[in-house]
Image (cartoon, rainbow, N blue to C red; front, top):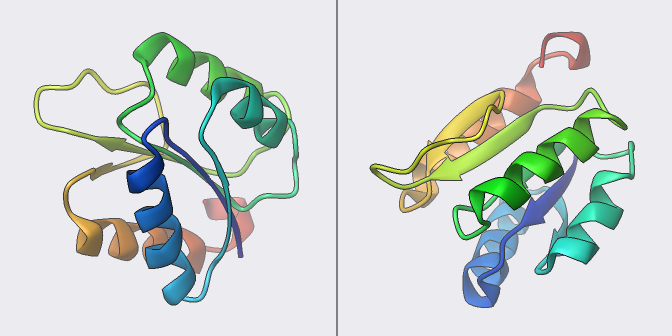
Length: 114
């Protein structure tokens, strides 16, 4: 399964990529808005993961761009008290086990039910 991971915090992005790759996923990461837009225009990914470090307006724009090119699910990582953007799934940004469990649950579903 191919995952796009986007975060504006380089260390969090690297950690998330390593975590997901160790779980057997193929991950492509973006650390800037322009790089994220390019990846969101690629309809071949199975899941989009949006980090909590992305400003809400840019997150909303990335969701819109991704949706116009793909029907794959979107997982938004959030922190307590944060206003989430409309996504298919949510996970606590500070809970790596929750992230892995949520990703496994999403990708285990048949493509038409994600």
